[in-house]
Image (tube, rainbow, N blue to C red; front, side, top):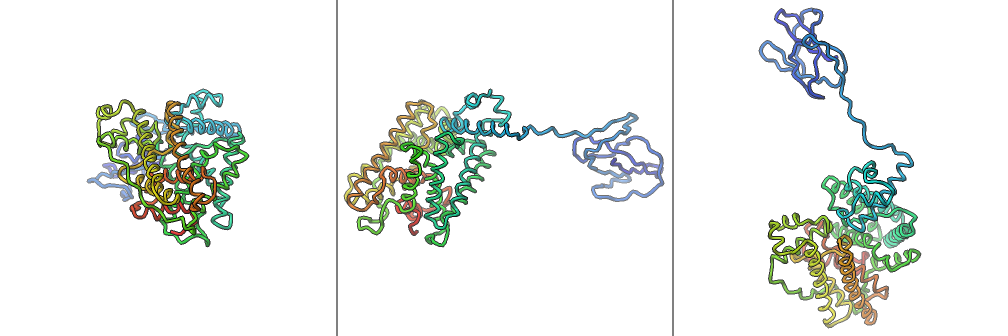
Amino acid sequence: MNAIARTTRSGDIDKQPCLSICKDRLVDARCHLGVHSGAAATPMASFAGGVKTGSRERRFVDLGRRAGTFTYRGAVVNHSPKVAPKSRTPPKTRRFREKRASILDAAARQFNEHGVKGAALVDIAASVGLVTSGITYYFQKKEDLAAACLLTSIAEAKILVAQAAEASSIAKRIECFFTLLAAQLAAIERGERPALISFSDTRSLPDALASTVFVAYGELFRSLRTLLKGADAPALSQDALNARTHLLLSFANNFSGWTVRFEPSQYPRLAARVAKVVLHGIFDPTKPAFEGVGPRLPEPPTVADETAESFLRAATELVNEQGYRGASVDKISALLNATKGKFYYYNETKIDLVTACFERSFEVQRHFLSCAEQASGTSAARISAVTTSLIWFQMSERGPLLRGSGFSALPDREQRLHVFRSMERVIERMGNLFVEGFLDGGVRAQDPTISANVLYSAINAASELRQWVPGISADGVDRLYTRPSLLGLLCDE
């Protein structure tokens, strides 16, 4: 037992046990604890932690968690250490692992359809034959479950990247990666493996969970970046490499949405076509019809009410980051340093504002498409102009545009369908430009719908470019991002 030596007035030394008053703390051991047999008088030795005050010796000692029986002011005291409570983690039996996997599968489907904020634990539990308390046996909160789904998706993606990395060239690695991704999605569609959550709602998680997911996502980004390195890689700066990795990751994230027009047995054909567009682009730079990147088209006119426009931009930014449910009225107002009263002065409801954000984004896209369709020159020049203009708008103070993936979390089914149809019509207009480009020779002869989807994905992803290429300048956007969007990941910088 820990003891402290105290000098008495007679010069004798008593060795006295110490009582832990607070768990695991150093305590002042000046109390006289019990009576022991006398000991030979010895001088008080100095020790680490001792503080001498006059003729008295004060010592702070760590009583730890030692057990024992001793007297304190004449009473017998039994001291027992406090034992930390046992972990709530259930045993990892086979049955536990299977049920946990089924919960992750059901949760991923609910999160993909309703968003993290919109999905309900009661619905997830019901789909696997549990009550809500049964879910909390595995995951204490819905956010913990969402984070586990995201980490599972990231881990699965890293497995595909690791397998693709074994190929001998950049082209083969990218082709292999999309082939593996297609096989994974086909197995999910056939019910042969659990569903995987998309990454669109990551920022709606609490900070502690989100930071864990972002670290894992960053590791996925870096592993994917290795697919673009090698002896056959074009000479690229670090910014250019990061921009192309961001493009590649965005294409992979959108790939599942492109499968809706295909049977699962046809997913490998889709993967081959997507890989061809991603690697080689939509233009053939050796053809006379290709005139380079740009130029930019006239921007749409500014609105008269700048305050209403600022609410649209703020809501768009938050919905892009945190989804419809995560972009609350309080957060939108706080981003503008506005009161909730001011919010409701300009907007009837949040859903009205978000619907207006989608309409604004589609109007901007329609404006640039109309300008391109009316412009002179080749189809390749018109496609290049509309792409350059939309990416520039995304990066400007008037941006960003609302990401297409945001529509899935809208609470009203009719609104979701309306937004989806509007997006499909914009992509169809872009595809028509590709068909015209086949005739004048400036556009590669490949599936126009896939080409339009890949290009639309690149335009959408431009809103997050600064996260991966910090400090990118306006002049650098065309060189680092727009150029590989049009000419493919294998083009030079």
